[in-house]
Length: 185
Length: 391
Image (tube, each protein chain N blue to C red):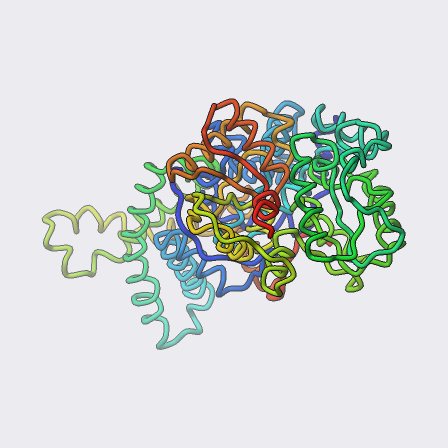
């Protein structure tokens, strides 16, 4: 049978906690796990930068450039592989909704603007002649577009429902179902 | 039909789980029905996607409302499922999908989306307390000419089940179970007033008459004063463990026949002849192995029966359904036999001479398919295999 794989024995009715979910995600797809973890970090650090920026003091730079910037760069690479996986995986296309594809479109906007924000000051930009000239004008509007797109995505992905509601529902359920879980009775 | 009401039966946890679904698609490829039919409405993840859509429309009416046609397609997909739990086994979230499918079917049935074959089954249950609409008075016909006790008081009750009681092909299996119980010197009885356990109602979603059936069985069991109930059917067994145990509590121990045989062999209550050299394999019933965790007991039993026990690919916890579970056969006979055919082919590939199982539904599905496929693999119930080896 296509896609069949050996899985460790689980107990029915199921038990749900963060450790089991994390192990399950890694077992199912390390790529998915990395994608989701990086996405969560980027969202949290992005909100910290935007909402708590004035109060961060010395922490601001490290959160912005290391936690958000470099992890963002890693996310770009993982996202490219993830999108390729979606394109070639029939099972993923079967379960993904139109909202998820709009989510991806918004990620692409966030990625482009994120690169535009981060790149002009980086030394490697000079390795590609003319790239600095292209990115500099974009960089002027990029922060605004980056922030607005993030909030548009948050609202959109809650209402329709996309990645954000998926994340919130997951966190709520796993947090409230530390003991044996059964949907009925 | 009220499509907008279809998901009303869902509680907060069902709704949240559907939103939490990671959309990884792991459940899609492992579904035996989807693999067989290729119909995306049978793919677990796709059904969740569609039901989530209905839930969203209910929460946010400005997005539109559910229409009868699309709801029908979703419901059809819900019933084209063997409830084998393979989707659950690979779900990274450990999401209790079997319960979700059962809840969704209940909701579908209540809102008028129940399937005709299932409705007929429920009518039969209401009229004759069995799914075949055979006279209730003939439930014990299989015992004629056999040494089957019907006592007022006994230590052990053998809950025979509808399939074993009414299906002629399963008579040797029921007879073999009785032989084993007699050989072990068990003070046992079958129930005079046994009726269907109610699991077909639970699977169909039409649960309105289920309590009456359960009450009848509980009264009959309690009147015998039995401390142990033995089952041949994993469906009845799981139904008792899930639904009856709340009433019966710890007073009554529930065991499947194969667990009991394992304990008999361990304790020396039954003596077996020397092991045969027959190449024998075992198909794990999904409910018994994946959903109830009984995987080692059958292997211990077969290790005492033959020197040549061989494993089917996809076994124990990872068993692939035979196609006969969850009332799927009543909805799509061709699809069900298509799945079973793969199982028979796998048994042929490992050169098994005999295929055993511990479930009357698996037995029926696999043996019917083996006959139509003109396979050389002999299909028998585990109890027959054990009874043949009794000293």
